[in-house]
Length: 466
Ligand code: HEM
Ligand SMILES: *[C@@H]1O[C@H](CO)[C@@H](O)[C@H](O)[C@H]1NC(C)=O
Ligand SMILES: *[C@@H]1O[C@H](CO)[C@@H](O)[C@H](O)[C@H]1NC(C)=O
Image (cartoon, rainbow, N blue to C red):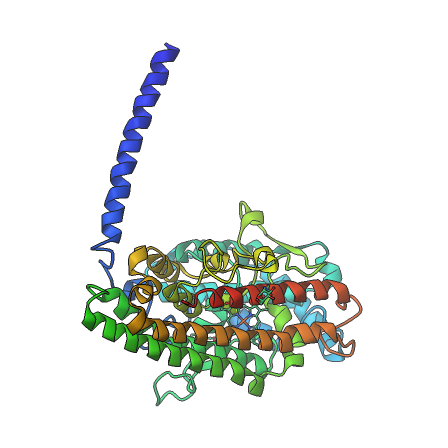
């Protein structure tokens, strides 16, 4: 009897392997010739002009969700960081407590009615995620203790809409940058200069400017997406005509990336490092951030709350930057044999960071990146450039070096805004008090940040073809 069961299961296994073999074969042939089909950027939530930003501002939620929208407006007027011990912060304690108590009494609204329109789902995610961060960070630390309990009235609907969007149930780059803007001048089209982010935590123009700069990166990168998409559509990549086009496009891509670096550097003109570090950045932190003493967040009424992705927004979630990385074939995981050899500290850095950040993107954007990741090896632009060095190597390397220069600039920015600030904690700052000036802990966080960003820059260097 046992033998029979075994051989039946063997046969089943055999059939399974046969089936898998056929499936893999089918998948390979799909990845080959027909890999680019079907190919519709719109299906991946990409607009020709605005790229990963929606083409127009999101509409407000229907009337039955009015409470959420109103609470968000109120929060911006009445809440301060719980760790803000300045007179201004103190003066908002009572209104903050009232706001939080009120949220706890809300009924749990059903969000199924929003399913028909992705713009409503996005808006609901944005509004609820802001409410969650306002709730968690306006609590005085003593009240929060080891754990922030996010009330079910916001935790449950946020988790529900997040599942539908395929995005983490927490404030993300999409919420702060991609989804909450209007055009500043409604007579003109959306552009990097004509965009205004509405919801901010700190009441500081610096925060609004920071979001606008990130959005400018996304908008300018929409041009890069066009290049990438046209590359994906090429019937073949080795014929002379294609090669001429690819060379030209790679040079254009290098120029676009140089432009992104300029946007990044221009942040200094509009965002004050002190304000950024002490008044803005705290609001973004999610559950159990690296700094010692950061409480874990628990979502009341949500099963498996402890395994949710709950680190806050990061520009590391920028779909545009990921798309450029994928196209140029930057190997953040250090799995490819490339030179120079990664250093010991590169290997120690958080190599899964970029992949993890994709869970904080909405599903279509993540799928776009997966689509690119599935590009057959021989078709990847790095391989194509290696096959045709005379025509393509320089152009390809120029694009990669522009990206490396972006990351060099990014390291300098992070150093100015985070590492220097954390080393010079200043007790008079509104966001700093005895409890939060944990010098060594921040130092460790700062070192991790620096190792991560340097490893990322080094991985970009390794992409260069010699
Ligand atoms: C004041 C300005 C900025 C500061 C202080 C800053 C800081 C950081 C930090 C600390 C990280 C590490 C991961 C994390 O903690 O979330 C990071 C990652 C990242 N940031 Fe920024 N950032 C800034 C602006 C930008 C802008 C404008 C972009 C472009 C969209 C950008 C793109 C990225 C990317 C793609 C990563 C992932 C790591 C990498 O690709 O090297 N950052 N940033
Ligand atoms: C952003 O939030 C503000 C304030 O609630 C709202 O008026 C505006 O329409 C929002 N924009 C988007 C794109 O959601
Ligand atoms: C990056 O490369 C530099 C120079 O090759 C090296 O000194 C450094 O250890 C590498 N890694 C990190 C994380 O800095």
